[in-house]
Structures are given as C-alpha cells and as structure tokens.
Length: 73
Image (cartoon, rainbow, N blue to C red):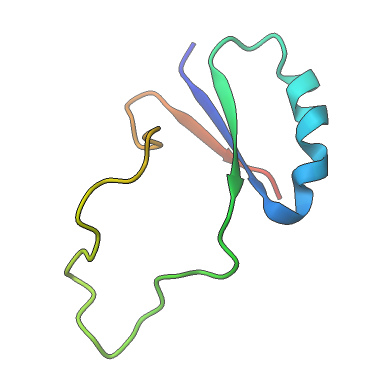
C-alpha cells in the first residue's frame, strides 16, 4: 500500500489518539501536525519566484510518488 499522511491542524491535536486507533491496521502511515498559523505565502509586491531557503528542511517528502495526503479538518 502507498504511504498515507494525515495532516492535522493544531486545534485538533486531541483527535490524534482516535486517528491512531482508526488507522492501526494500516502499515505505512503517519500524522503530521500542521504548525502554520496563517497561510505564509501571500502575494506581495516583491518577486516571489526566488526560493529563500538554502536547503530542503523536510525529512519526509509529501510529494513522493504514490503518497496519499489527507488534511483533517
């Protein structure tokens, strides 16, 4: 089965235990807590085409082939 990623908002962390029980039979999955407070990349007058980060900071790539990402609302 393809990897499954559940992204949970900060204000719903209390539901992580329930999600763990619901997905107990799934072999390759994980929960990621969404740390964003607001959308970071808003249109500004400056040029947004340049990436400011010097290196990739993610240890687990959400765009890997076959990965299914679900946002918990």
